[in-house]
Length: 423
Image (cartoon, rainbow, N blue to C red):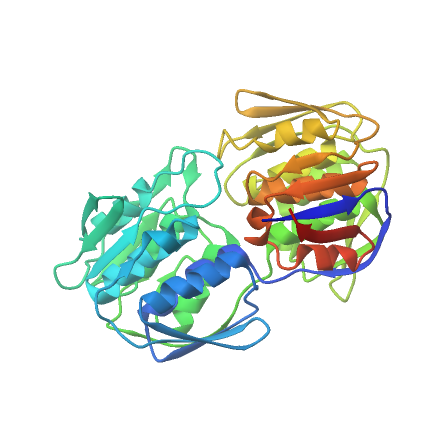
């Protein structure tokens, strides 16, 4: 086990670069199971989740070669039925993305029920609904999902909206499987996230026929086979947003490189409401500039293009030092507030009321030992530690390593006093 030790109070300046998207890379890697021939993927971040997915794919018969920073060459070497084991799948929820490609290409899939961050109940019912609509026969046995197809899957009209909105991973699973199904598939209530669009563009490069990319209605005409293709993963909008919050909290002249602001409209709107100007220069470098005293705000997480749940904890950290009382409501994962208790240890005045966080701004946070409960909560605690008075130790940082590439090195590069040590 390791921890991050942070000395708070430093002003940040310099350029910090955004890595490739974790949430785009994982289903794109799973999609390599569909292809004949080699795919070369670039801008893939070096994260523990990525290394887990690589192990899963190798277990499933994909040869993966790391050619350089952020570049992976992937080629399927077997199409025999195989199993994605509990030991690997339990480490990360996105591993369920292999389910659709396996049953579509090999006619059989056995995948352990997934693990990942503890941020509330996240059932797999929409994944199974989509695949069943395509003709897969699915059973749950001893903690595993077993899916079979009698010959090729069949196109269908599917509604994938859920109680809390569309599911990104269920959309990805159904979309990938439909590419090799006979006939036409229509997915209504599809997730519109940029990560789904990036996956769709990769599938098109492989030879898939997809219309409505980036919209709630995706239409897929199945093809006999797909071939390997070269593809670049988009920048990570959540990492970009996290660095923008760091700049808002402690920046003097921080420039965020690689952020795609068109993927962050709702987040930028909230930052502007609190008192910041967001500027992007001709080189694409983004600055977050304080325009007035930071004030409270109300915001609600929603499916894309709404405010992302994956930036909720970071926003809460920013608002702990804002004037007035803020209310942040969770519509995606109503129980995703485990960071509130840890922020309280740093002196924040926060409480959970039903599915909302109520934050009353304070003048100063103070360092303490805190614990990351999940990936984004861990990032929020790192941000808080950078502006807290004194020393903050963030424990269980394996959560953070799942989604942030070399976070302490990047933050040190803009002036943060942060080191990694054995806990």
